[in-house]
Length: 202
Image (cartoon, rainbow, N blue to C red):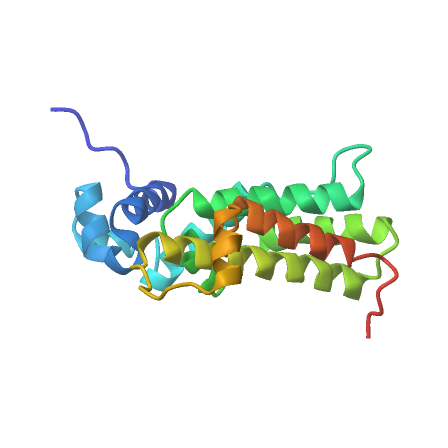
């Protein structure tokens, strides 16, 4: 009889992400994860102290999957931040309730904080002050979170059942929506156009 694969923190996080796609955040429990891994629940606590710690580890995987890191050679700061925002959105959308998981995270590893610091340093290389660099990336991050939260919620939301007004009906006929890629890109372009190293930091 083949031996069971060794239970590791990495295996737990991978299984939790598979379950997340299947049952969503509300259905993801320690007991269900243990069943998925073929172990008893107490065995999981050798690797994570609480469910919160497990969810934070899942959140970190989603954050890193978004493609954190400094710009490529020759890439402008606007192109880089746009690429970063799109990659982050794609990473959150790739898993059910991805935005909720990250929005509720309480901690990330020191390695990820150091990684984030390289991004801030890259922006200071473009002339941003450290304060403006932090606010710039934070604003984009919150925009991505909010957009994806709405987009993922809309997937399962029932129709409102209210007749739209004339202008709203025309907008919908023209292909507009309050969620989706086109709406996201519209907002992202507006945000990037209003950002820059000359912003007041205080």
